[in-house]
Length: 243
Image (cartoon, rainbow, N blue to C red):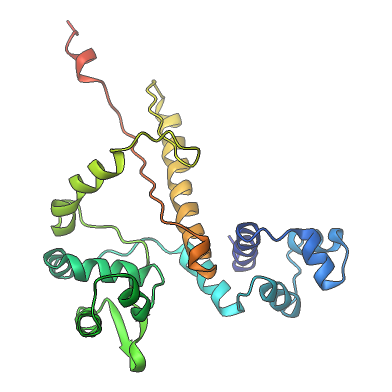
């Protein structure tokens, strides 16, 4: 995918996330709705028009470019040592998670039982671990993607995987904003590959939406979890009756 198309696709997703229609853009920019649609379909948006649309989103061009670039990158993989140290200190792990999700240190201190002193200590430790770069006034530059692929059988997975699965699935999932479905069936090798591709695209879309929604006020978003499992499988009870 070209950089222009990727950027415009991200822009359209940002507009959708904030409920901004082509009609509203047209009205704000004093153009027809057809003209706006043509700008996107022909990929002929000038930098000036792009800046004007970003202004509607209360998003600057550099933030848009960052969201677009991050969506193309895969998850980060930490070193064994980095995972080990995070796994040994749950409070540090929570602090790191919150930073990754766009929280500022002062905001974390306000909402969580983490003191100023602990916050500074955690920032220094994360900087030493090369998970962040710490700048004056506790400004932070992340050195990992928000999405992290924890090591299979690594320190984090050994401690938290079973607990996370148990807590996440220990719910009725009967609310309108939740889904839990389980289906079984036979698939050919080709269909199996298609399903894997669809799952990969869904996970990428979910990650991209979390990046986009970092730009909206925190009170207008809420924490979510997405768990997907897909593999060749035969129920043990069924298998037990085979001759």
